[in-house]
Image (tube, rainbow, N blue to C red; front, side, top):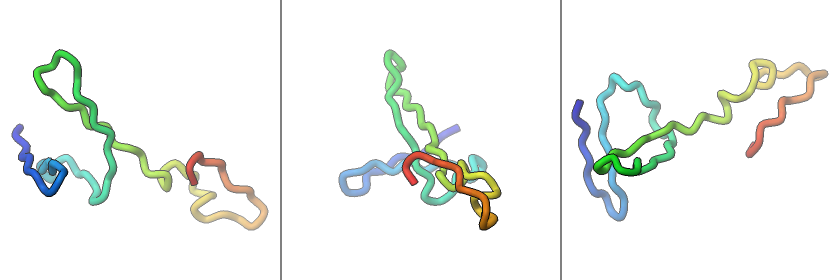
Length: 71
């Protein structure tokens, strides 16, 4: 599969096919793999919203929220 990279300002934008189903605005951690000939590993950063339980998205007045670091 081929992807397209282009320079925009001081950044490089990587265009990937829709079949990957990546949400607009999804954040990733990118790592250059050692001894790989320039291969890059992109790991999505999970949304803090997805880490919350259903009860935290729609809490009852008597239930304390789940502690999620960074919120």
